[in-house]
Image (cartoon, rainbow, N blue to C red; front, side):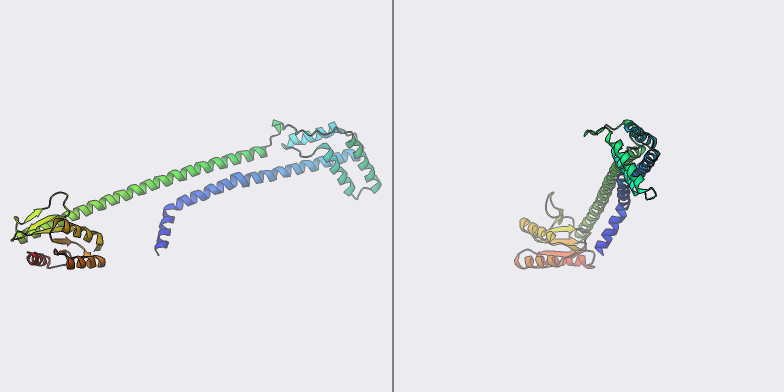
Length: 320
């Protein structure tokens, strides 16, 4: 149940951040992968359309026995690149090879005529300029809208993701600071309440002691002393009185250890008055100490014990 509760609280506090991160991931996907991929697919369709158009045009020119040279091929390719904003991926020679394949696969043309058309294309290919191994320079005018959209999409996607991450980080930091501030304020308020309750309990104990033993017998301990009051009995014996206020249900062992140390250092018995009961281990430790030491440490719960004043007087009289 604790794990489920902690998980629920974490989701409640971080749900907006989770949605923000999911939005950032979707932005990255759309901007860096989906949109450029879609644009690239669109560009390939444009290139395919231009290629089919060029193959058809060259076929028509050759079939009708019209003159065709490298300049004509370059002009046809350049025209398609400019009109459709693409970069044609084939050389004139590669274009002619594909035209040959189209003629050979066209069974509506007699085989002998197909052979003549292929030979005519071979003659044109033989006089084409030999391509160089240098990579051709890309004309700035041929930067297609598709490429521009891809670059813009990637830029916007990355920019939006960076801004989103900065926003999520800043918001998380602010929430954390507010949470810490709220926690500090709550803790400060709780400490103030504990201090106030502790002071009230100490005043109550002082009133009880004054009522039981008189003002001459009850003295505040010196500053820095491990106890709150020193009670002098009628035969001049001293008893340390310590008041403990706690928000917990039980007084832990560390408190008993401190009282034992105080009793040994100040060489006197100690009366512990509190608003809570001793823990099991605290009782065991206290009983062990009382069974071995010549001084007793006696505990009274002022909240649960209706006869607290009677027990206080009984303890003082017993050790006096």
